[in-house]
Length: 259
Image 1: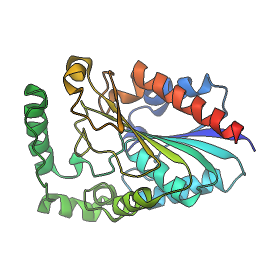
Image 2: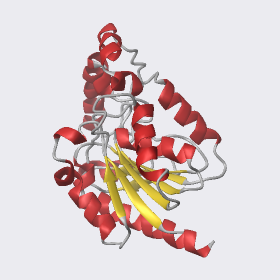
Image 3: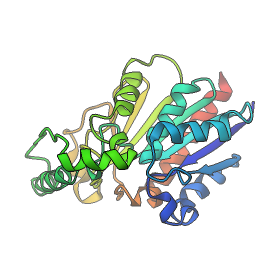
């Protein structure tokens, strides 16, 4: 069975020159000589996540019998996870770059202001002060969510995110999810522990080199600590992340071939 790589862009991919923005990500994969397909939610824009997943499933998974390595950035990471839920035999592995498994702050302006302030304090104290406040959705975000479905889909209480998290927490067979989060990420909630839980979830934390050495001993053993300068938007162009991406795919392909 042939193996292809599907790269799924994030929410704003339609408006920021898709190939330009994800060009280095695609190049890193194409160097592995995999047939690479690229899509985003461009036909749905700020629409509903399940609908975007349906569209991608029809466009790719229902057209052939290939296996897929699915790479998703931001919202695309959630869609990648949903595809793996639907096609556990067809998806070889999932690489989630900055996946907002616990929600994203931009769906709620009040949460964004609070989170940025807390993250700034955490950075200044080098992780010495730990605050984990509950960030309930504001009336404004609930109102916006009536007209912009993605606001509901990426909120912390989203039914889609709850379903995906529950699946990953109970998953014992199927593809591994490689979750890459950055300490400099100002979008996911919360940036240092936004990874999903589960036996088949491998976690990586890209810590800015300036604070990387301060985090040794502070990060749970199951999280691989990396010295990458990668934020939410810049992650798809970070040399360290791109090298990690290629290593993950190579490893998964070798493992698959040896089965």
